[in-house]
Image (cartoon, rainbow, N blue to C red):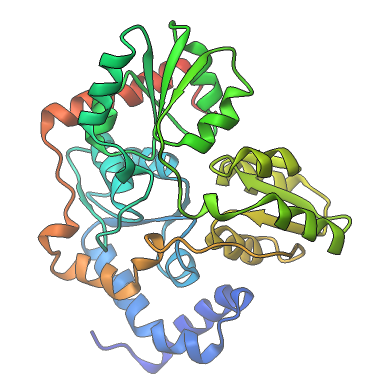
Length: 335
């Protein structure tokens, strides 16, 4: 597509105004302006929306995305939106969740990106766990494949995991696949949790020593961690929760200095959306989330490859949807 100098200048200015907070230069913005304009044009022509998880890069989050957030919340938005096509900038299981809720829509993921949590457990593993613990219910974290969701009793998110587990009728609950989140939840529930060995490769890297060092360097800092971190880290911070929980905390906090013990995409969001907040300490990059680039989105809109198209067998989709629906029956929609 060919754009006028005026269109390119206007787009460059728009991009720079957003991306400068994450150290993008005007020259950087000018380089991607033709691509973001083409994506915007194709998106409109195809009645498509672009969803971006909060771990995506700033050029995707603020250059082309229509909605930012956590995976399940984005999938819900997409299911209620009139768009006929969903481009989900995320790891593969998130695209599956969108397809579970929007079977009539075309759902595309720009790059084939896995997830250490989702890939740590299979359907066969869940079946073995059920045989080993026949009296236990099965709660799966949303960071799982559609097939694993279909084998579980109910799904949960990092924001509502305690509510869901507490609502299970069984005294024993198999919680899959995040071992570290399970250890954190065990402190908050009377249920006996049977845990799997999955971990998030981003969050398992953080240690309590780093927390202590930052507190010494920045005495008034507020430290927020994802509940996918180990329990020693969670016990040492000011707030532990989901990425959405973190953003809500920051919005209501009067703290000037914040440390985010999670993936770097959240740091980019805070720098952009809360200009008065100063981020200290180090974050960690997710190699899976960072696989996606603007050119991948363009390919998905122009001529999607088979591996970009999310397809789920209907029997698995229906069972997985039951798992998600049960979560909504337990937890109010605003949780």
